[in-house]
Length: 372
Image (cartoon, rainbow, N blue to C red; front, side, top):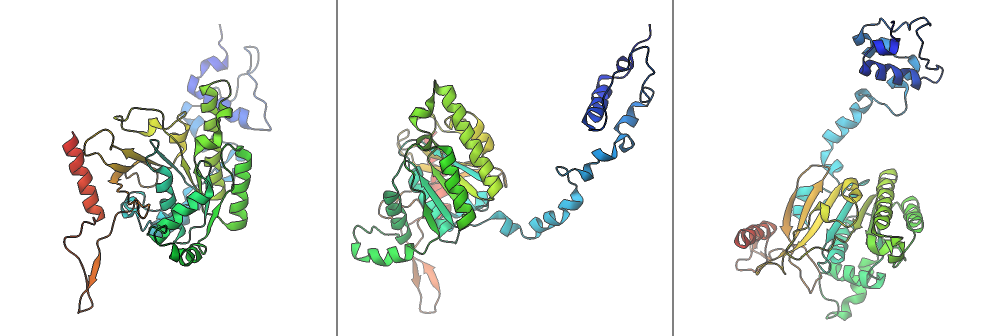
């Protein structure tokens, strides 16, 4: 009994041929019966089906808007190689080791920060964003948990690098300087609709050329009433928000920093990417993941440190300690004081209790060894 032509060729060849014929808009795919004449491609060698000769002109990749070639990418690749410092983004002055890992702050990316309750996520994010804003990165803050007055007070203290409650006579001086920064605040607080937030963000990007948006934090923006019928529905809604923010960052060439609470875990459990509250969407969509690990409650000499657990740009991962200065509300490593010498040169003062970044990392390593 004669077998049909579809049975005569292999499964892979049938699949390939079917895709090519079905995709062509001016052809209808027909399967001949035993009584019909066989297809002209029936006796075609298998390898010939994979060659460019069996490609309709309309399906030429060079003519499709979603397909490109290295020839079109060549100049952009050269530009990234020859201007790698600019491509890496804006460097942090207060966190040099973060710059060493992430290389810089770039438009179009999504950064997620997580950490246990009370570890200082908002305080760190305010200084993290302030550092960039002081270098001209136009910034929009969306604080859904902390009111704007309290946030502005924290950022002003970090900017002045002193406790203004004790130097209230200097308030106007520092406030005048702080006002010059390209810094804006969304007036939302507590639960908000995603559409309203995205509309405000889109307006800020189009009208103010905002380059960095901070959303602090996802759970407060989502709200308790959005939980729906159960935790699975809440996870689903959260994933949709993360996906929307990811799309916003890409389409608007704007960096989005998103603060998310972790799952409820014990104090002795070290947080990881899988600890981020919700489904796996957040860790998948993020370009960078930063975790504040707080070991103060789990080990006698425990410290707080920032860990980079995902980095799409360079792939570098690492950690450094965060020593909190209550007077300045700052996590930035303290700089050793300098003294001017008669010859005009400056030298570091010995015996200072201020630590450099390398010494801070060294302290963390020693503490990690001692705690094992």
